[in-house]
Length: 263
Image (cartoon, rainbow, N blue to C red; front, side):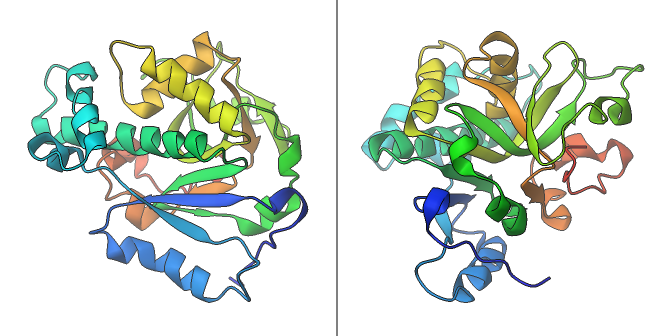
């Protein structure tokens, strides 16, 4: 497809798109690098790399002061009883990658920040059409997975739920009907919206995986997060997402969807 470029002006003037990426995952970064190289000038929005936290490396080696402070997350994380050390490291690493990006947003007082993971892409055409100044003042999903409230729900009807969504618009999450999972597309309209989520996570003695924590917030703290944009502005690159450590949770029916419509 032809590349769509977003000019840094009006509501997109300060827009930043951060990609959480491991330094070793150079192949995954190439798609963003190629896009950036094709930009007409520096006056257009680019993908910016943010160093992902390797939880399994952090467990054995803390290099920076932040590493040493964050090691405690291994004691705070809640996992299934049969989760192995590697899986625990993956979950802690993912959680900390998002937390560290929140810290950056708050410290630098960044507004209009879109965070994606490196198995996803942004629909630049759709993003270019919306007004970011109308996104409110709390975290909103720009991409995710529509899920039933229970892991296995025989009465779950995705198509029926989807019919209630307003197209090309923000939609409310109904915590009595569904939840949004995954974290491949999160938009922080203001640094305060990131600070609110960060303060919430810092206040908890025990933590779950980042997507689980956000699901809890949807239900118990809607003042922090209760909306998603439909259709998704951020969608998955299937061949990469299927290989990720959480890809196993999508494989019940072959996982053949980009999640452009959240399911």
